[in-house]
Length: 83
Image 1 (tube, rainbow, N blue to C red):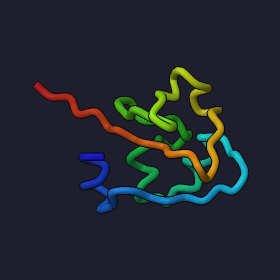
Image 2: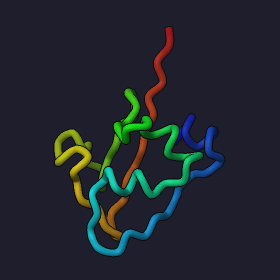
Image 3: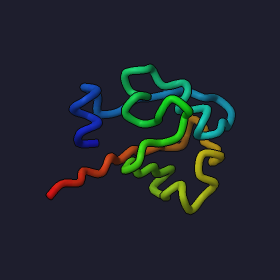
């Protein structure tokens, strides 16, 4: 959304995972141009990225161990701070 869409030139990315996979593994499947805005080199989400699975914040689920499949929607919302 917002800055992430502007940076990547995409409004959404569709990834087929088949059976359930961990969110951390899903992030490793993203192409580099997108992944660099979402996670650092160790695979940890950058500060300020809100991650939702089917509208639920993954911090209230199983964080990066949250399992997702083809029917799930992962939403990435970068927060912008300024003053």
